[in-house]
Structures are given as C-alpha cells and as structure tokens.
Image (tube, rainbow, N blue to C red; front, side):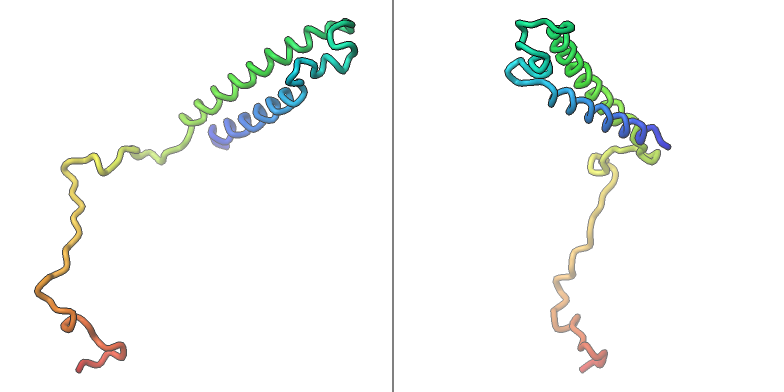
Length: 117
C-alpha cells in the first residue's frame, strides 16, 4: 500500500469526523448542549464545556484535514520523471511539416477501388 493511499484513507476518515462534529452543532449555539436541558440555564455535567469541545474539535479536524491534503500532494508518485513542461524548453522544436502548395488536389486523390484513371 502506497503512502498516498494511506493519506487518502486518513483524509476520508477526518472528513467524515468533521461532518459529524459539524452536524452535531446547532448554528444558533444550542446544539448538543441544549439537548441536555435549559440551553445553558441548567448545567448538567458541564454543558458549556461540550460546546467548547465541539468548537475546538471542529477547528482541530479542519486544520488536520488541510495538513493531510497538503502532505498527500507530496506523496503522489510522479513516475520518476520531471514534471516540467516541454513548452518551456528553448532547444526543443516540434515543427510539423507543411503541405506542399505546388501539389494539386487532383494529383493526390486516388479512387477508392485502388485503380488509377
């Protein structure tokens, strides 16, 4: 298994965890903490700490996802050859032959059955 495959699997796992953490949160600040009662008026097991944990885990997972994506780019197997463009080489010319203007269209056309006129 290549390192790129390992990075790809880690990216998928972190992305899934990030989706789960974001979906648990409520955009108005309630989220998981409001399901424990009162929306902050009743402290059941440190509900305020739950929203802090979800906020910190969101930023941590997002940062980890970005780092994994950047590291996976360096792990791609490029086949050992340089990835430079051939268009930038000044000494390499790729000229295509031009058609001969003195040759008429009647001279080059041959019948489909292979017989000449």
